[in-house]
Amino acid sequence: QVQLVESGGGLVQPGGSLTLSCAASGIISSIYTMGWYRQAPGEQRELVTRIHNDGITDYADSVKGRFTISRDNFKKTAYLQMNSLKPEDTAVYYCNADVRIFGGMRRDYWGQGTQVTVSS
Image 1: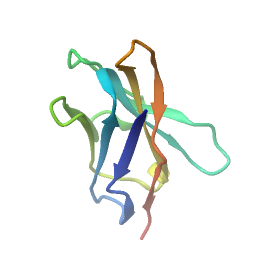
Image 2 (image 1 turned 60 degrees about the vertical axis):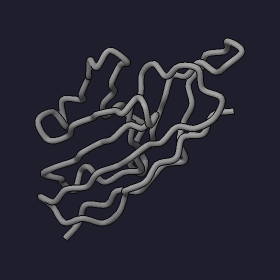
Image 3 (image 1 turned 90 degrees about the vertical axis):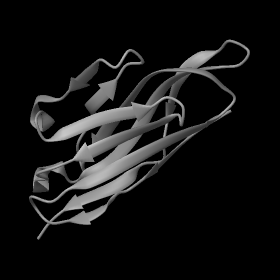
């Protein structure tokens, strides 16, 4: 019904930058909040940042001032610009979207995840 496809992960040196993208497709009526979560090995999945459909954003304290979330509602795509990356940012990053499909049902969807590795 709804697919979220992430791209842009990879290996980067400390202090470097990466941009992740999350494109939504399917029988979408409305997309409310879009966000990024991450999960490091042995850790629980945690919220990194999210953006509501009115443009209001939330950030985890650990990424404030370094990461920026944005969205293009026409393209149904969210972006995560990550600057000044640190080794502790290494994780699988998952896109999440709160979506209402045609027919009325509203629920959360998840992407497949993209690996981000910060290492020298």
